[in-house]
Length: 243
Image (cartoon, rainbow, N blue to C red; front, side):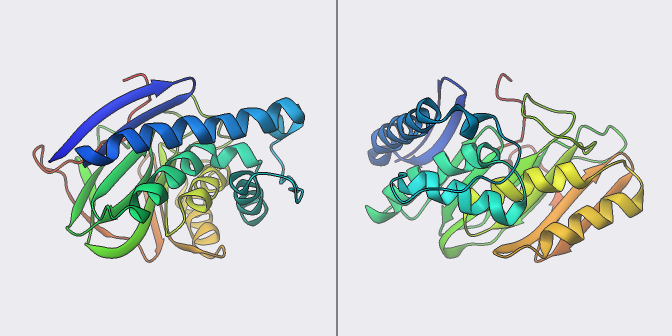
């Protein structure tokens, strides 16, 4: 039976939609990966503070190395990918166990495997725009939809976007690149928004990027179909973790 649960630990605010038999493993993996990240920050506090790419060492845990690789591609600090990284590891664990339908939303950074269409709502925080969503078609393997905002939620962004969204197979990369997209959106002019979306969509491993900022919307690359959001269709709506 598919169930939806929400749990929080520290900065992690995870909403998981999956078969009931997989949910305990999702929680276990979240705790394990959080400990790996905490251990790295204890070893080197700079890892947890820097906004610049960080070089991993051979002794680092696999997740730490993935975060560092993503930070280098996106040009951001490794912690910019932390939410997507935790969601990625949890999804990879249950996918290896046979799960083929799961949505793990870690505060707006979403890792998905799905044998059916999934509609994900967008909280673009603009009353001038209608309620919108992305319709993500069924596909094999794992996929991610990660977001960053300069105006919504507690995450650090140096830009002005209501929401910057990146689509990629790897949630670690998508999360880091969503931060980069938000940072590049200097203002809500069509030129700034288009430049940011186009730049990030061309980063290695990124499928596409969508940015909503004021009255400007830019979509570049391979972006899922944008549809009107019907209340009954929404799988998850991007909101601040405290909502």
